[in-house]
Every structure is written in structure tokens, then in C-alpha cells.
Length: 387
Image (cartoon, rainbow, N blue to C red; front, side, top):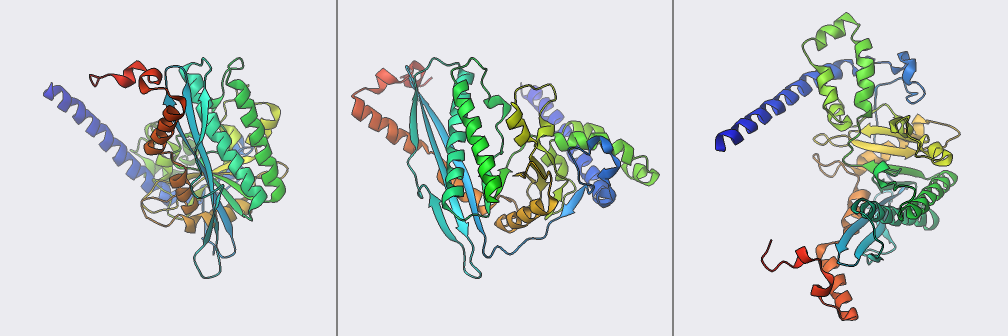
């Protein structure tokens, strides 16, 4: 058994070493040539990537006079025999920066809002329950963002996560959760329209993106770039195709982006499979109005994925995108190994629903209902033998 385990671990070490060596060599070449890559030479990607520059430096801006909000939501589920409890919490932390002193901070709806408790008595599959729970959290976050647009003077609203729903959150049309999904879609449309009308920069900050759109684009353009003999010679012996196939966008961009640099921007809709018929026309219009880039905010951290809503009538406006990124940079310099903007960090901390909070709510439910844990808990949750 020990020999088998050692053999497996040795193979894993070899794989890790191969990835790291290839990453280092690939990044060295890309750092040399990234400034000379002209994406305008590839008309096949022009509709989704109108920028010619492969990477672009961003200069941090003075935050004086700016109002920047961070929005996040918390979620937890408690399962009983006859129902599920879904606990959600949405919160906004609004920073207003003065000319010299530190920022003043306001909260919506309050610094430590109580979780919203919703019972689920429907007979749903495990997947449907997961979808419904995720939709409840999304709805809480969007409502808070709408309130910030109405009640605060904010120049930027940073949402923790994507500006668009994940395909796994879309229930089947006949599912009992589908009606909730339609309500969340309506909230998204309301948020997009209100943000565009108000001129507030609406931005999604995705901390752990698993997207591979950039790696696919690089896989398409690099063979053409390598027709240059001098570049081909630099890349010779580096299995870049294997590396791209086994890397996410954040991983591959980390090999050559410097702190304060961003990647080219592309349309969110370009990540939606062409065969997908899951989007109605209006939502699809907004998916085409969300632009995605990656920004290296900290020297020792992976780049973060930034999604920004721009006016559907104007398309990509690089100057607006760059102004927003210029404000995000100084918000993300708390630690060289963790480059997340401070309003997001503060909102995330306050949005989390702790085990202690959950237990207090359950205890209160017991006291008010007169029921016992034996009555409510699932059998495996009350196994007296510790299994």
C-alpha cells in the first residue's frame, strides 16, 4: 500500500514539475513578445475582441472624491426531514474617499443585517434545491445593488462574483424553481438598465475564475505569431499547446502579466456556446454588453477577472474600462499575495452566515414551535454512534 501511494505521489510530483517548468519557460517568452502582439491582425476575433493590444498597463488613480461600493451575499442551508431552510444575507459596504483622511464607510441595509430565512417545503431534487438556494442569494445581492444605486452616491459598484448568472443556476422550464429564475432574470435586467441610466460603473470581481476563453484565443493566434522565425526560435522546445490545454485563464495570464497590467477585453457572450438557446433576446443583448478582462492587482497573486457593464449602444469603451480598473488597483494593495479590492473584502466578511448564527436560528425555531431535534433532523444527522 505504501509503495503504491509513493508511486502515485511521485507521478503527481512529475506532473507538477512539468507544468511549472513549462509555465516558467512559456511566461518568459510571452513577457518578451507581449508588447508586439497585434490582435488587429486576426479578423476572426474582431467582433468579440475589438482591441489590438494584447496587454495594457493601468496607472492607479487618486481615489479622492470617489464613492465605491462592495456588494456580496451569504448563503447557508439547513436540512430537515420535511423541509429545507435557506438562509441568505445581502450587504453593501460603501466607501467615500476624502482628499486626505481615510474613507468614511456606510452600510446597507445595516452593518450586520439579520439573515433572511426561507423554508423550502417543495419536493425538489438535490440539483433544484441547489439552484433555488443560489438564486435566492443572487436575488439578495441584486436587491442590495439596486438600493445602492437609489440611495447612495457611488461611482463604482463592485459585485462579488459575475455580473451574469451561471448556466448551472438555470432550472429546467418545468421545474418549480424556474419561476424564481425568471424573477432573478427580471432583477438582472432592472439592475443593468438602472446602472446604464445612472452612469455608475457596474463591475463584477471574480476571485476564482475557471474560465478558459483567453487560453482558447491564445491557442488560435499563437500558431500565426510563431510564423515569425525569431519568435518561433524562442518558443522552440516549449509545449505551449499542452500548457494551454491544461490551464485556466488566470493560470496562463499569471505567467506573463505584471502588476498593474490587464489583458485584452472580450465580450462575455463569446463564452456562451453558440449552440445554447437558453437566453432570451433581451438577456442575450446584455450578455454582449458585459466586457471581460483580467487585471494583475498584486505581485504574488493570480490576476482577477473583471466584468464591466457598458452601454449596449456604444460597445467597448476602453477609456471607461481603464478608469474603473485604475480605481480598483489602489483598492487591492493590502497584501502582495491577495489582490482583492477592500470593499469586496469587507462585504464578504459581513455577508458570511456563520455556523453559530445558523444554530441560533434553529434553536429559536425549536423554542417557538415546540418541536425537538429528533422530530426535525434527518436520521443521519442524529446518529448516536457517530457515523
